[in-house]
Image 1 (tube, helix red, strand yellow):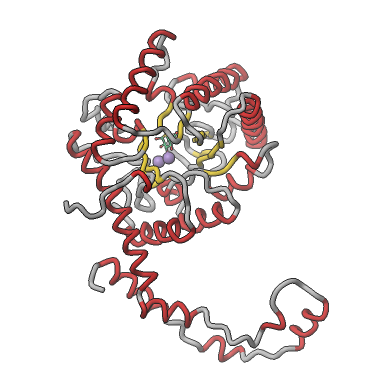
Image 2 (image 1 turned 90 degrees about the vertical axis):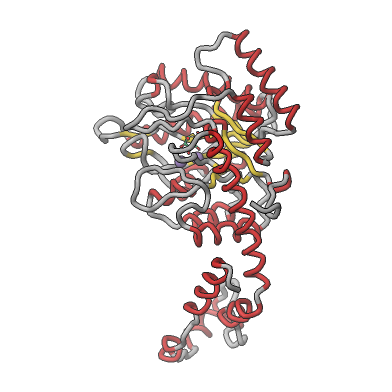
Length: 389
Ligand code: GLT
Ligand code: MN
Ligand code: MN
């Protein structure tokens, strides 16, 4: 690899401990890599050029650790951060691995599970804040069902809301400088999960007591699993002021939950996503929530991590090229041309405007007959991506 496209702290590239630390297990096969420590992961990420590392409480501190063990682990982790200069922009809670959460956490039918989930999250928030996190992610790993006989979907929404309201108040009460980012996913590990898409989540957030401190953490793979256009969901979140965080990876439509390296499957989709984030000036973490193939050893895991960042930076350069390409921009200008002939109908409603609009005549046939040149525009985009322009 050349020295171009080197990741720098200002690019805000982050990885979860669980991503590069993934040991390559799948439902059909045992792990293919030995576990490595959080300290080793921090050094590996620093070596690959990342800016930050994120974690679930139990990625760092085992669920059954004593207080003394917790303190030692946190001390060693802080030392690794100090030694490498990596930061912790985001933290989250594991509410899905332990069998206690087999039927969900905040939406469990069992009030004891709900209370335990809340307690675990309070402690995990404290841990995340102690390490500097300013974004706290909620991925409802097992908040769902295999059968709708099991749970009342209205009760699930209400329980989820009650938990989020409680946790918002906690963060405010502690004067934590913390925002919440809710991450939707349609299925896996549950048959169906609640708040399945970015759109569901955005609507849910508006029903909370403190919507201003809650946004979304959209993940490429999750929207693709739902068969949706990820960019459109991200744009809607951005428009609503709710794009607090983003999980970049890749996923073929219609397949199992893949969590591939960013740009590994849908390059053009990844290009328009990067272009969007850069064009609007998204300032948050570019978090790669992805896993190396289980065929890899830890050298391959490093290749994976470097590949995520390198692809992002290449696509960022391609986006700048697209924005500066005279032929492309001439087409964009032509597509958006406006001769001013409809100015009288634009903007806010008025009775006279509506009357004028109703009286106007349009050449419907001419409107329908006009070619839009999108074929040329898309081909030029493909040629930028293929490196022949
Ligand atoms: C898990 C999941 C991810 C979430 C992580 C945060 S954990 O790996 O697949 O999409 O972002 O809980
Ligand atoms: Mn995922
Ligand atoms: Mn994710």
